[in-house]
Length: 100
Image (tube, rainbow, N blue to C red; front, side, top):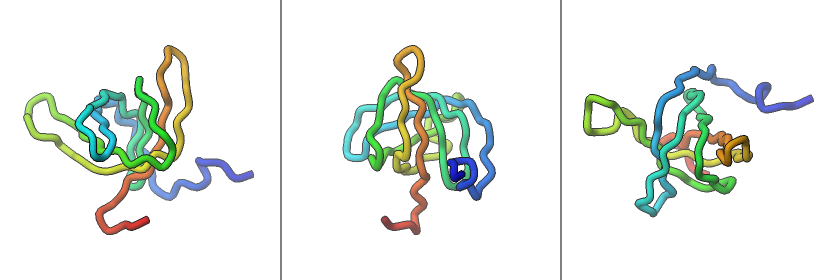
């Protein structure tokens, strides 16, 4: 049986921090809760659904600094509706040297 857990090569960290997402080429920010983060992927809960294979810019902000701690692109791999109208989303981090 092949499931998502078996396909992961990078250890995931539980982070539970606020992130901001925006579709590439737009200015509309969507606040979300990052659940896990690894060197190759991210999972988060959002009120906004994103389509599979969509490229999204993610920013992790600091409460004490006005510039983002981290900013990177992700490619949505899954998006499932959950309770309260939110969405459980998983994505691959697009590293600068990767091309699709």
